Length: 235
Image (tube, rainbow, N blue to C red; front, side):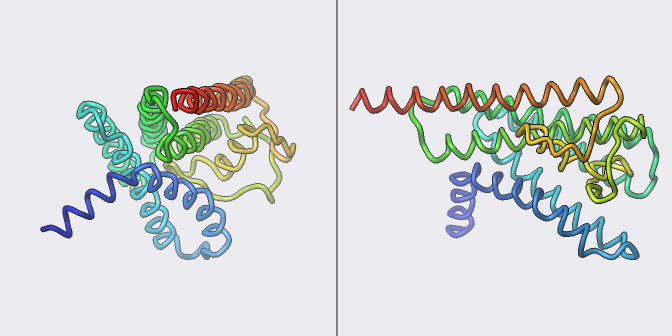
């Protein structure tokens, strides 16, 4: 019992680091799996991908511990998303895929807002503050990736892209082959130009993500620097 309690304490203590690790694994594992996984093994592909999403969901729910209502809301949204996504893997319905994307967007956006409340509620910089701010930045890329995947699902001609840039990113159904890659290229304003938004919705989302990414870095860095100066002056 003591070892279990100690394990729970460590998981709670390092909750932001665990979520950050899950996000990094998602970013790294998806393209590697796409290269290594044979197209003739869809079941194995789905199992590995589902395992990554399960880890990410559990890590996100664990990271928002604090207020019971926040944790319960995150658990409800994350659990519902995974359950509907599991159904989609067998039924392959476009309507279900749209629901999966919507649930994913709401879940990750909720986690972002809870983490932001935590960050701006801190009075000094800690390791948790740094990890939480990094998690928010990566989660922003994930949320926009969900939206890009949804747009391509509903409007297959919303983007033009080369086959080199395509790999399978599946928040639900056959939604997107490129969403995470394109999202983070846009978030960081890198803009290789190999993927171009064509529809008005795709263009608007891309512009909003680029602006949001720069504003987040500006605001959070200024906040963290202000906390560091205030803490140094207090000492």
